[in-house]
Image (cartoon, rainbow, N blue to C red; front, side, top):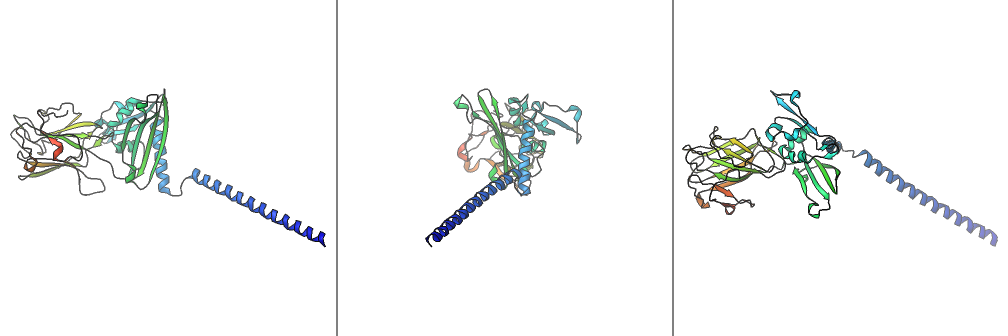
Length: 358
C-alpha cells in the first residue's frame, strides 16, 4: 500500500514538472514571436501611408544631397535650357537659382564641399524641396553641424541650420549621415514634414522716409535665416494721417543672412554693402527728390507675409515715426533698429549718419 502511494506521488510530481516546462517553453515562444513581429514591423515600416511617404522623402532627399555634387538647369522662356546646365550650381546667385531648377548636392569626391554648404544661403526652402523631388505640400528643416572635434569650441557649431520647425507639422521624419573630416565629425540631418507653417522672417532694419536733394526714400530689410527668402507673398503697407498705400511683392529673392534695399530710385540709391536692391519707385510706393510717397511728419510702414493657404497677410515687422514716438526726422535722416526683439519704439534711434546696406 505504501509503495503504491509513493508511485502516485512520483507520477504527480512528474506531471507538474511537465506542465511547468510546457508553460515555460510556451512563454519563451511568445517572447520570441513578439520580438520577431516587432522587428518585422520596424523593417516594413508603419501601415500608415502618410508616414511612409514622409519617411521615403527624408531618406531619398538625404541620399540625393549626399551622393553627388548636384546640378542646375536654367529656365528660358518657361522651358528648361539644358544646353546651359551646370554642375557648379553653387556659383549661381540667389536670383539665378530662383529662375531654374537646382538639385542640391553637397559631396565632391566623397567629401562634404564647404563652398556648396555656404551656397545653401542662395536657395529657398521651396526650391530645395523641388530639386530633391520632395512632394508639394511638404516642408523641411536641415542642420549641418560639428559633433566631434579636437577643438572643443567647434563642437556643436552649426554650419547651416534652417527651414520649417518640426513643431508646426503633424507628421515628421528625419534622416542623417555623418562625415569624417580629419579629426572632426560633421553630421547632416534632414527632417521632412507633412505640411507645417513656413518659418519666414524678414526684419526692417533702417528706413529713410524723408528724401533730400534728389535722393530717394528707402527701406533696408534683413533676412536673418540661413535659407534664402522668396519675396512672393510679401507686402509693404504705409499708414499715415494723410495717406494709406500698400504694395504686394511678386518677385525677387533675398539670400540668407543678407541685406536688401527697397528704394524709390535705383540710379541714385546708395546701396552700401547690401546684396540686393529692388525698385519700389515705379509703383509709387517710395518717392524720390521732391516726390514724397511716405509721410514726412509721421507714419507706419508694415512688412507682412501671406501664407499660400491663407487670405489675409500676417504682420511680421513694423517701424513707426512721428506722433507719440518722438522721432521727427529732418530731410535725409533715417531711423535705425538696434536688433533687439520685440522691436518696440525703445529699440529704434536716429543715427548720426544714414547707413543703407551697412
